[in-house]
Length: 131
Image (cartoon, rainbow, N blue to C red; front, side):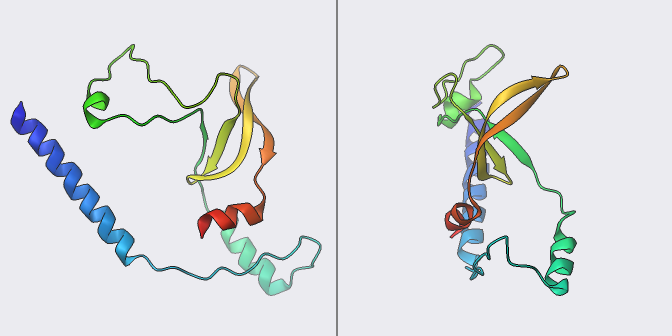
């Protein structure tokens, strides 16, 4: 049993080392300022925009978060309860590829869950968080 835990810790150490190396290799890029929506775009800009509109992204809704140790994570099983950092009834976060874009509330539409956006983060704020 001890060998399994040592092996698991070794895997985590290796993964953290790889992640640190990847961060060290990352380069910062300069982003262009966004222009207001009322400025017409050129044909070249429209072509560039059309080329990215079909790129798939992952959208997720986050009910809340919690930090727990790996020891406690490994002890979770069916019926376990994990306390989250949100109060019941508080807005959910809407994330696209891990970036907060809005807040919303859960709704049921035709027996399926959905989310009604209550507050959308502005483009300027989203870009500021990327820097």
